[in-house]
Length: 125
Image 1 (cartoon, rainbow, N blue to C red):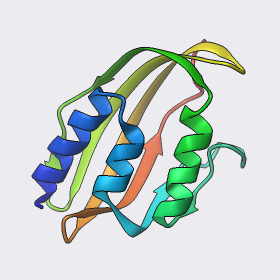
Image 2 (cartoon, one colour):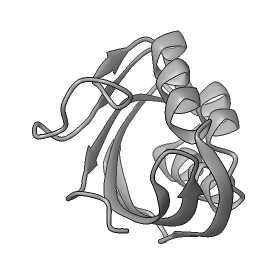
Image 3 (tube, one colour):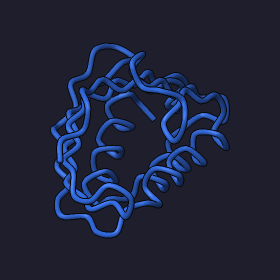
Image 4 (cartoon, rainbow, N blue to C red):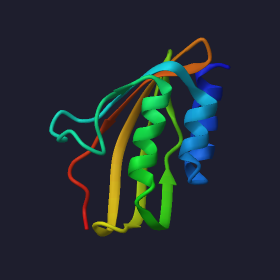
């Protein structure tokens, strides 16, 4: 798959709230996931390898009681890189309703995502 094909499929799956399917379908087995430097270790930590990335996703999204909205921009593509802005409103069992606004940057090699990096401030209640 081309970077554009991967990017469009990721957007489609994110808009449907199918984050784990996106990881399984589009990520390389040795992919790397990077959180902002200010994020303390815990549920959201840097991970290497698809099993660890999927486990991080399950830890985070598993706490959702209800999704209220998932919005995702069209991808901006530059060579093997693409980015999207992701906005999610969800109610989490542990913290209540929050809005997540983040910029997500991806690198594609041989038709698979090999790196994802997230940029965001604290989540808003």
